[in-house]
Length: 420
Image (tube, rainbow, N blue to C red; front, side, top):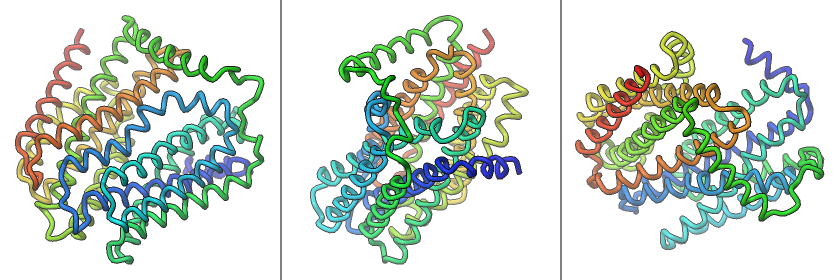
């Protein structure tokens, strides 16, 4: 297989191997920590979970990406990246231990969320730093290959970490604190793995660093505004429409995820352990839909065009989502999880392709920063809407129909734009 062959070539670079070890341990710990957070907020037997609590947890997980993300690169271009991996993961290990202590102490929820917010905020620096460090450990000829395989390996590590968290929680008889401590151990392992890299190896190059931090931060904000203006220009209209469509589809996916969490917690499971296992199954099925999208989308977008494939995805969701969602039953829900995983990821791949093709190279990085902000803010906004609409058991026909209407509106608007 070409992927195995490419990876074997990259692993010949010692620096890449060591940086990959940092990534795998760090993102594996992220998967563990996120499952622990979801289990504690949603599936603790002693807690009466509400949709508002789920929305708060999603905000903790995702808002740091939106608020810190655009400015993380500025700081990473001033700090030695090896040190960011070392001290960032050490700090996350310490904070995760604090989170475990808060779980055992049954403290007020706001204090628990502050601790979790600090852990996830540091994650933005780690992920951005891993990408920025890649050119220092592989040659230019293999950089594209490294940019493709390294994040994919990290995503798989996060998925494996989530699976390991489910297993540890089962062995530890539902102890979420034990799962968080596992995540802390992996964060510590990532910090120790970074010590195998020389402090100056990963950059930044000192001569390229802006002399004043305030100037650099202000310049970042100005660059984001310039990127939005670039999107508004007529040659980039398709990219702007695709970004808008993807943001709305991400909103729909977020609302349905909250509904899924509530159904697994109350309506479809006999107890919290059964509900957590059902949620794990549904997320696994949705992940299979994401993988199917990676196979189907290149063929479909090649025949129809990326914009029309987005139309097909949104229209399919508008029809299938209420048909599968309104029964509020386990079987149709699992089918819906697969379909929505395929549709959402298929639309995202198409949107990425349109943006990369339509946007000038000088603006591409900042447009993807705007994309990242919109993507995560839409998810958090959807959780907020779901918190307002969902009843205690999660059975809300109104939310299912609202989401279907949004999908239909996206399909109609994108279809009209493609026709023009």
